[in-house]
Length: 269
Length: 364
Image (cartoon, rainbow over all chains, first blue to last red; front, side):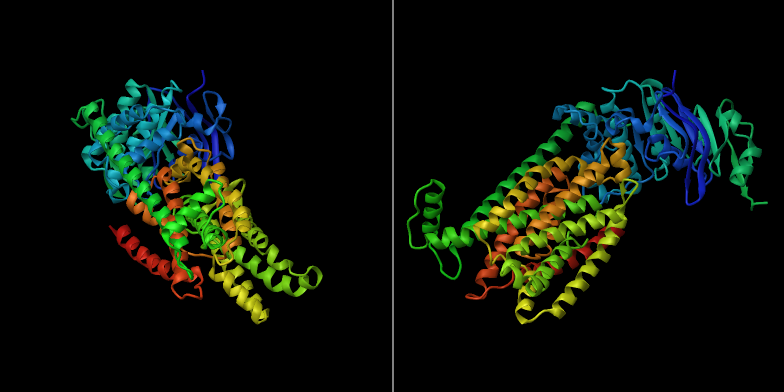
């Protein structure tokens, strides 16, 4: 049985540097995978490889056994939705139009009422319904992020009529959100994984949130996956200290939720 | 997360969508009425004023296949009607190309003039006027003026294809490279055009100036018949690009994520712009700023959705040039102003205002 999305020994080079090397990662419906790592570790590049945006120079990316390059764009769009780090618009689209783009690309003729209810449902799940009539360009960064999340949810719902198993890719989805919306977004993503079921891959910077929400935690450093597994096993102070160059304390928290406390930043030895 | 009931949410959205559609319908109907009114006015006004009743009578007679009566039938059908129709066609083509190019570049300031398409067409026209007159005329007589539109058309197409070749690597077109290369190619075409002007004699210089300022003075049924088969299908085909351009507004990667064939959309958009601008420059010279001003106004009134923006821009461009040509013909009777002077005089301040407003908008 081949994985829904799978990187096998994947490598990607740019400017004479390996941005990602020998990466192995499998996404399965029902599972939340989080990638953590310092800036420039190759997290976003690995995600772009797995979404099909970039083509690997080494190794392969497959979806249900087929190389991504062989799957037509619309079919891939039914199988996965992507929320990029930040999306600016050059033109004054209304928020509900932006969310509706999630349906348009899939190219299924749909009754206007059905499309509207998909858009409304997605907006509501992302707590962005109140923004529906606003001009996207006038929203704050956090509000824009919620609208983009709604757009991705809308695409998943629309694609569900074609693909039974789907994946959701989130690149720093909570970077601009307030605390409440950070938790709400990650809750929604985990609900999707549990009930839809959807495979979730998220790049996160908050180690504690990553550990709390992920079933599988991946640590990247200098283009390579240096550790992967259940959060409790991966969050090792020595490893984190080496990768993030920050001394960490791991107080004995109430199990099963491990948490780390950054102590101080330490220059490279 | 929110407490609202899904049915209520869908209802709110439906109300938004219905209000939007009603607004679009009203504005489009009003623009079409304005365009028709302006067209009739443009036929009635000129060096010889013609009563509105006679204009309508002659048009009606011609449309129903009868022999039109009236003293001015020849002026109406032979001179003014083709001119008005040509202005509408070129205006629609230029505004539509502007809207498509802005969607492609994800930049509201993009314009066929900016990436050197118009400059390339004008250079080819200049070369036909100056070099053709000098070296070909002894051989083939008055041919240069017959092949002038064709030369302009080839020039526009050639500069677009050059640009495209420079900006495309490994089958992917970099929009940023294309924008930069377009500015450079435009400057090069401008320099070569300047050199041609330096070489030319008085008469050629006058022809060059006429061409670079734009005019519908030479409008005829022949010219109309030459460009209508190019421009009308493009206007009809443009709405098929709307979905792709909407997705591209999010970014190229996002458009791919949404399931679009991004490279195909880019190819189609570039071809449409090259054909529409080449055909327009071929019959009327360079008429600037229509491609920037019209789509921007449409976005202000009707929003950015390309499904509405593309047809509305075509109507708006037709209206603007019909009105501008009317002014160009009537302001300094019996002489004529080049229409490019009018559109630039109106368009340039508008462009500056756009820049100021844009900066204010971005810092918010």
